[in-house]
Length: 170
Image (cartoon, rainbow, N blue to C red; front, side):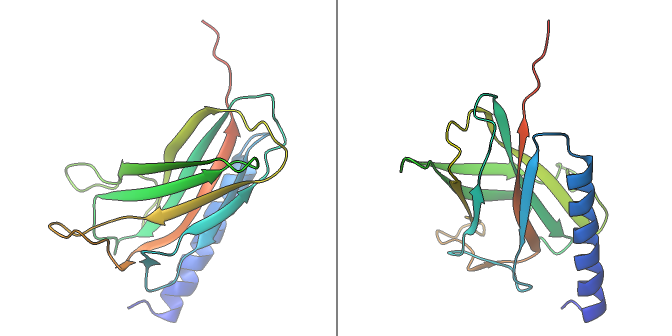
């Protein structure tokens, strides 16, 4: 169980990390995070975002950002995403990401609170200035279980990052 001092410290570190991410990001980059309940991420509780990307001419990369603590019990995570276009079409993806190497070392950055920037979509062109709706669900199951975990512990926040792709010259 987290103490109030640990929770305050974790919240402060999350705030600093978000500030650093935003201040270090280049022009055309946007991001947002949502904190999750202290008990964990409920199975049927999506994290929802409204994305308004103003640059409709450039290709963009869309990343899922995930922050967890040392209490996260798995080396990977399964996510289900829906990306709703303003015209009403919806793209649903089931995603699997490794969060730790075979030796147990976290692949993300940070000590105590681990931050991962997970590739989601590359070469996306947001052709409408109206908002797109992104929903992210956790779909983690314990080994041998057909049902997803009712509460996924250790995940502190979930977010997204959209950044303009840079062209590479050969």
